Image (cartoon, rainbow, N blue to C red; front, side, top):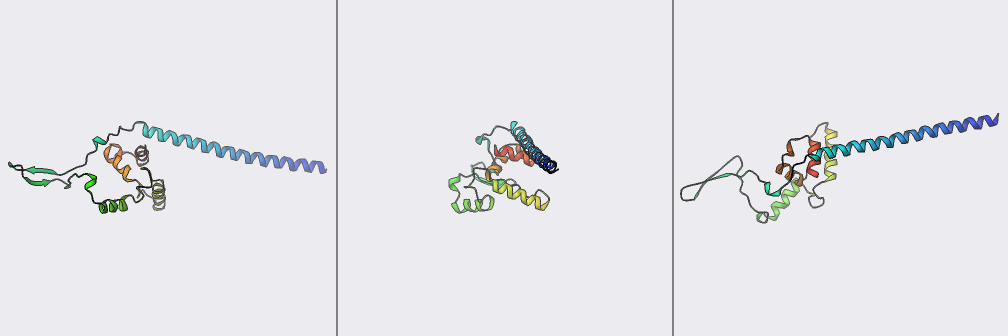
Length: 161
């Protein structure tokens, strides 16, 4: 009788152990499958990425109108911009721009994981897409290529690669 009780307890322990192993196996298989799906999504997002050429970067500048004597008469356009080199921009303006747009600019290499995760958390709390977490580098890529009109997540992957 005592032998039968010990055998029943062992069988129960084995069944519990087997169920636990099955749950762990299913969990790891799910993680592997989700990783595969995520990798496939990233690959398909960047597969048709346009070629990046820094020479093609141009921003809207104002149109300049000159008179017959080559004197500037007026600048017209939606935005009144005059292109200058980065060396002509005062350091205080550069620092102010970085403070507002991307204060961790020198700590990341174009992809700020903390900022992306922070924006994702803020969007989850808000229940809508209010923040994007784009760095200055990603904004430049968006303006220099035609990937800025795609779905936000797909666009993020393209800007990062």
